[in-house]
Length: 115
Image (cartoon, rainbow, N blue to C red; front, side):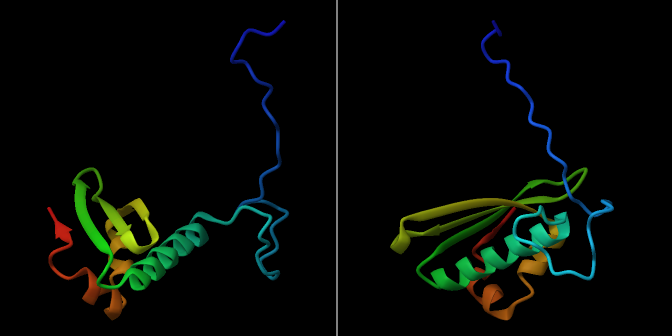
């Protein structure tokens, strides 16, 4: 009999950037894990869409939570019309990439950026 809390670990072969099974000429499959860069691009695109969808009715707040060893920002998005809240941690590069779109920067404004 196994003690409570012990589980058999499932062994799966993970496809990644350095895998011999990944073929760079084929389009990415939705069933295989994406690279970290692809994943972060999807997160940023999703955030961008939700910020634009919320428009002026959405509440957005960005705060810096760490300065060192790396700047990390907490983005809090609330869309009351959809009864939806989202909190995401971003590094400085990802935040700057998110704010590159003029529409997003106009919605964010100076009020959302906190120290």
